[in-house]
Amino acid sequence: MNGRDVLLILAHLFRKRGGPVTVEEAVELLSFKWRFGTPSNVRRLLTVALQNDLISRDGELLSPVFLFDRQVLGPDLVGKLQDSIVVDAKFDPMH
Image 1 (spheres, rainbow, N blue to C red):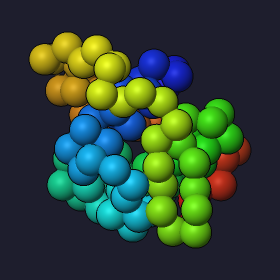
Image 2 (image 1 turned 45 degrees about the vertical axis):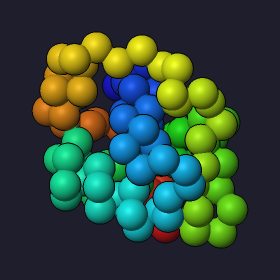
Image 3 (image 1 turned 120 degrees about the vertical axis):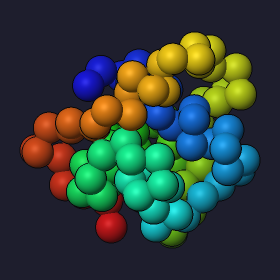
C-alpha cells in the first residue's frame, strides 16, 4: 500500500463523515461497514497516517490535516481499494 492509497481511503472516510471522527468510529466504518480491511490493519493504517501527518489525534478524535474535499477520487478507485488493506506489521495498531 502506498501513500496515495492511504490518502484516498482517508479522503473517503472524511467525505462520508464530515469532520472529526473517533478512532472506534473510523475502525467500524472502514473495517465493518465498507470492508476495507481487518480492524487491526485499519488501526495500523491510522497509525501510518498519524505518523505521516495526514491526520491529527486529540484524545479519541481523528481530524484530517489535508484538504480531503479536494482530493480527486475516481468512481472506481474506492472499489479497487476496497479489496483489502495490507499495512506492514511493524506498525502498532492505534488504540
